[in-house]
Length: 180
Length: 180
DNA sequence: GCGAATTAGTTACAATTGTAACCATACTTA
DNA sequence: TAAGTATGGTTACAATTGTAACTAATTCGC
Image (cartoon, rainbow over all chains, first blue to last red; front, side, top):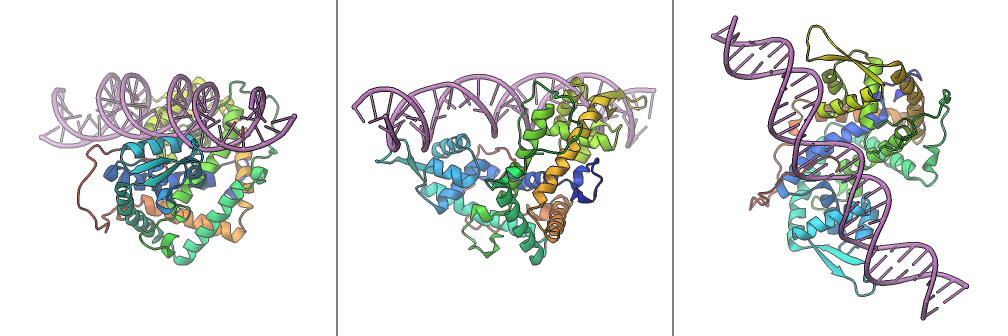
């Protein structure tokens, strides 16, 4: 990417994290604006539904594991889906903390209407690529995701040779972190 | 991606928009947590700095064009950078709405410290891929981005063959939209 | 040259989201 | 079995972010 650039210049348009972020946001916005308006569904809600459609009866914690969402986001999504009648919750007899989640008929109906649309969107998007390019993208994304979440993936955030490390600066640090 | 799937089933882990979103968020979080803590800099602020480092004197509107941020985000980022002494603003004589932005010495200093780190992070991330795979990813991302922002790119959001279009549902629609 | 539409940029408010603190239940182990 | 710890899940609060409304300056059309 920027590999061909001088080491002291960074062109945003060539910077992988930036490009990933912009593309992901563009795509997500396009999809979300479609199904959120049509079905009053947020992205976290959609994710929860997608997981439960394939694996009914999961607990919220299990949904968390499968969606790259944190448990608060799942909790909120579940609450809204329950309120909207798309989801049913049953307390399990064994563990009274855990609960079992599954789509209602209404929830399955919404899901069935969205899936073809989502797949069609993906298909159209991929018309921009040849089959070979699609395969290559698929492999690259998979490797990058595996790499970032490898337990030893901290080789990524390890120390850096940024020389000018004189002062420590910024005692009031501590921002946030989503896109780049 | 899901192309090999049945048309009524969607596996989140194979769905391109989902995968892009997760990867972008992971990468962004990793980068942001580094430079935001070290330099008290948010991502929008970093983006603005990166653009102005290469093209000093741009107006906020021009920064908007180059960063895939909207003008409110730019306005807020600029305000914080000004307050932090990283940016200087000069009203131009010709158009008294427009103003010219450029990094201060302090701003350039911060920028120069972050750039090597960011490029190093990108380099490490790309060690997960072979040079050929990196090239392929580069090409794929470029094509997808061009495709999504093509003026006729509305071929993406065009009508969809989702048959069961009985009721209209959801009069209270209108959520939001970022990730998928 | 004057009113209508545009553009640059900011402000205000609502909706999302992250972080931490918090119950309640279950497990561990001494 | 009681104290301590871990887990499932929710609530509360602060920080971000999006949307719309708004001010000020400029340009366009006539």
